[in-house]
Image (cartoon, rainbow, N blue to C red; front, side, top):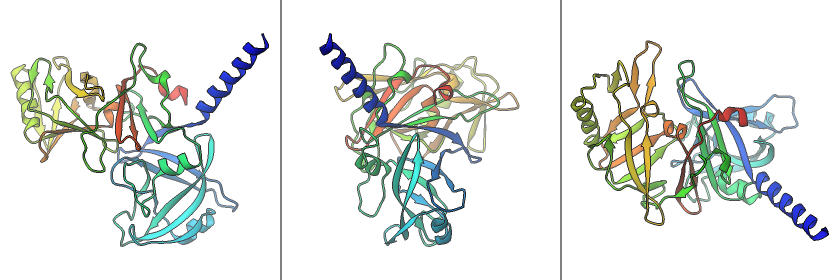
Length: 341
């Protein structure tokens, strides 16, 4: 009996440790349609200090655009100049999720390409002069792995761009659809970019579209991006199905999504098995206040690539692991995740 009690207590301790090693951060949407979250400075002064930061998985660094006076008033400590980013490095204490952490960030000067930005970086990049939140949080033992996961609420008319949550550290398996598992995808091997290979079988319903070889992700834009070769093949598929649309200022609008079909693409898991991403019409369109629908696809010059925008996080729970340089993905349980934060 006593041995069973000890095992039970150890199990509870392990569970509590695992929970403590994931930081759950609510996400909002700014006026430019970008996801952001708010960090509060834990400072000793009189000023009510907080900053809205955009999470980034691209080529990035931790940056807060502020004056030296603002940094001092919010309790940040000057570490010295950062010649690569062009600015000054600071150490400050923040509350992130339900934990207190010290983060190093750069305050860029006007000559820096980062000037005007407020970002927290979760990229693959490794550099002594570029700050990465995953490295810093892991070193402080606040997270159990160098990963960040995203999950967004489903859109509605009153909130066309959804909000949701960001899990820094281990994934929250309660957000995964029952019967599904988190799958790690092979890395395509693009330098400093989270990417995965695809099986070139992008389809609109049963209609094959132009080949796609590599998948990337852009959490800072709602729109998915297709190459200048694949995008026209999607429009041709709409026409072949008798689906009415009109093209204006590089955007596609539809009076109805009734005839739209699922868009599918097989990604390659690390065990070489296919993982099929299936985007339902409500996850690649958004309804506008005038009742029309906008297609959440844009085109760009790059060939044989698809870049999934953050609309995909409404349907899939997706993470980015810095150490493995891999993407993890699972079909998401359809629920109101804002109530879980």
